[in-house]
Amino acid sequence: MTSGASNPRHARRPARRPGCMPQPELRTSSSAWLEGVLRMFEAEGLDVPSLLRDAGFDPESLLRQNARIPVDEVTVLWQLAVARAGRPTLGLHRGLAATHSKLGTVAHVMACCVDLGEAMDRLARYMPVISDATAFSVQPEARGRWMVMQHTGGSLPIPRQRVEYALLTMLMQCRWLIRREMEPLAIEFAYPPPDDDRPHREAFGCEVRFGAPANRMLLSAANLAMTLPTSHPELGEMQEHLLDDQLDQLGQTTTSTLVCAEIARRLPHGEPRRQDVAAGLGLAERTLQRRLQEESVSFQALLDRTRRELAQQYLAQERHTLTDVADLLGFVDSSNFFRACKRWFGLPPAQYRTRLWQGEGADLPLLRAAA
Image (cartoon, rainbow, N blue to C red; front, top):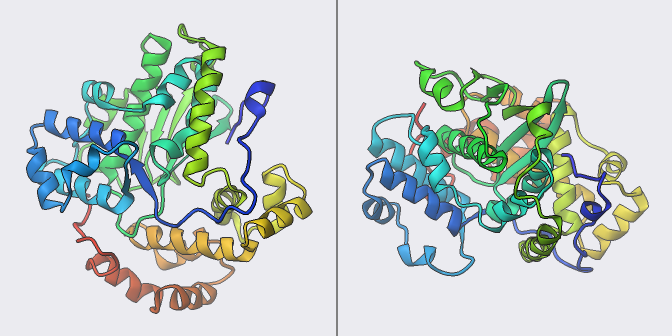
């Protein structure tokens, strides 16, 4: 993930709280973001009060200031909405994505940036304020940069519609920031192609590929270099302080959280070593070890926790074979993955996958995501 390090003002990080415990495994989204999604559902003709009631939701919970909603509860709402809408393209509407996305203070910080590339860096940094179940990163490519999105932390399969809507709202936010039309160079989704991909091509205005390694959108270098008419660095810095405080309250500034994110990024390439993770975070290995000791956690425990969390997500997705999951988690061979699953879940991976698909792996009912 890029960091805007060329600007010293943006190279700073929030102060780390010594002795802070690692972030809890429960991942959540902001109620403000979910409120926008619900308004989109309503605009699509869905009965939102009925949807909330049948999902076991307390509507009052959305009204509490700074309320956070567990990732699996958001998943159930999406699954119910797709089923009731009766169409797998729910949310693929540019106008609704532009109107109902609610990024709050994160959007204000993005608008204060010098150019679109810096705004995307700010979104990557502050995405946990919107949803710490969404891992968003910016990765360079010859023609520009990929905006990569991955959802983690839940035990239910993430509906493809949620991913599509998130990327579409990001595109519409980019168009609003530069105050002119733009289209991505490409869109890629990790899941299989639908029977008809015309709605996707119309929504994103570019080539759409399926069965890709990740869910991501490619923005051109020219678009990323476009200056923002609302740029205001001083105001942006003031708002960043507010968001840094929110990250701190969410546990997103602990060394443990940063290590887990770096581990997750490296796992598909094999089991990461502590010294490599330290280098990826710009730390000496000894410094990393000391900071983890201050937080009363070991590198090995964070590696195990990250693998367990990702295993739940990967095993819930039909497109991954068990061998694929073992590879994505950086295991040398499948037998090590088998033993880890027995330790994590009390079951071998195939049996645990069956339990997830039957809805027994979570406290919430499992409605299979629309294909």
